[in-house]
Length: 274
Image (cartoon, rainbow, N blue to C red; front, side, top):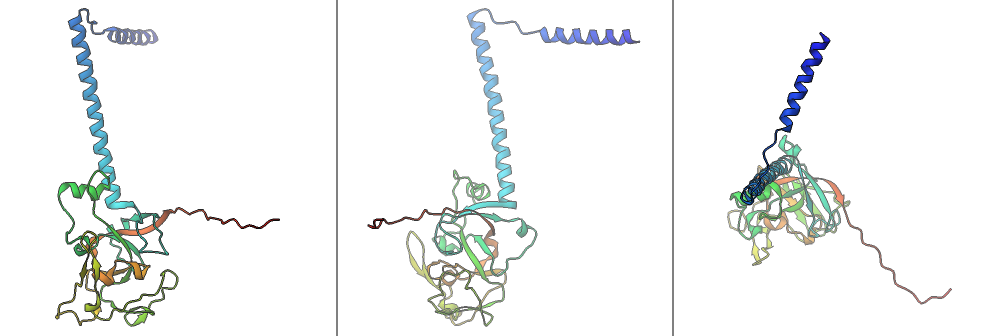
């Protein structure tokens, strides 16, 4: 029995070696060499292109899954959220809880696409390239500006702001002493008080509820909307200028500050001898 097994293995090994030793004949003439090299280049190039395309497709799919459904990184370009967030801070914006139905809470710091009036009158573009830019975040695609503010008013809340005092929600003054930079220097009592300068390219005064029908109505957050404000109340393009935010424009909730650059202090030399 053992002899037969060994013989069978030996025959299989010899057959394998014979197959391995079978190689294509090498080119002999110059013409054959040219064809051989061309064929090799074509095969290698096709293999390279195929692998590159597969890598790009897989990478894009991973980016879309992670950025759309899980989280994305953002940085702070302005001082509207000082002192809580500084210019240049890097943040992680989580989206998973929103996908599972978590509703925004008062005090949450959210990233969102602002109303069209703040974007120069243009809403988000939905052409394939712009959508791909939002889904992947790659700089090679166009992208729309996003804002970061704090949730102050939830649907149904009655909002009032008194200069030098603070923000009232449903008649109660919010204790914001641990995060705002300064108390607001403006009043908001009715919808007609909401307004201010918007637009970077062509600044203009914007008053979203200035028509006679709404101007004297109380500031009550509509269903499906939020009232957003920056912690730097007197230097923030927020809800006190453009009004209520449609929750469909939310991107995600700030959950982690993972990068902040601290400036080295400067020292002045004094002419004092020891």
